[in-house]
Amino acid sequence: EKAAARGLAIAHGADLARDLGNLPANVCTPGLLGERARELAQQFPALKVQVLERAEIEALGMGSFLSVSAGTEEPPRFIVMEYMNSPRKARPFVLVGKGITFDSGGISIKPAPDMDQMKFDMCGAAAVLGTMRTIAELAPPLSVVALVPACENMPSGRATKPGDIVKTMSGQTVEVLNTD
Image (cartoon, rainbow, N blue to C red; front, side, top):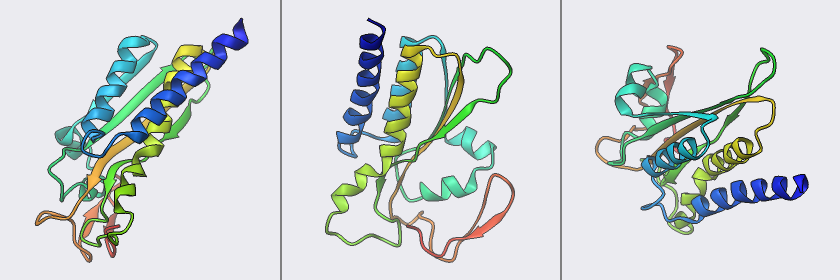
């Protein structure tokens, strides 16, 4: 019975990841990933979820992350999920899932053939959301923090250009030589 429940929990997490990965980029946006994370927190009270929007991301000084989304109309999100169930003060496991919901390459645009496949640059985020769902359902005695930076990388007049200098959250400056 325990093995069946464990298998079902794993299947639920895999289903979530697969469903997100198969959505088209105009549906699976950074906002949708944030909504899915919030829905998981409603379904599983042991999950604490925070979805940061542009103003909060700017306030944290995440300039290099924001430079990726500079050319798109779709607002970025930074998703933080916490499952804290460790029996002692152990450090949590940390999962990071890349959530680039569409990666055109920005100004350094990718070649047209297979560009439709660039919707899959968010599959790291999908895998992390699915994993957190599985963890919340199984309720193991451990602590996990998940981080999902979610945005699009598109060209426009506002996009980061090769040669631009951006400032990271740690205060370092980085010269962008290729926006992809």
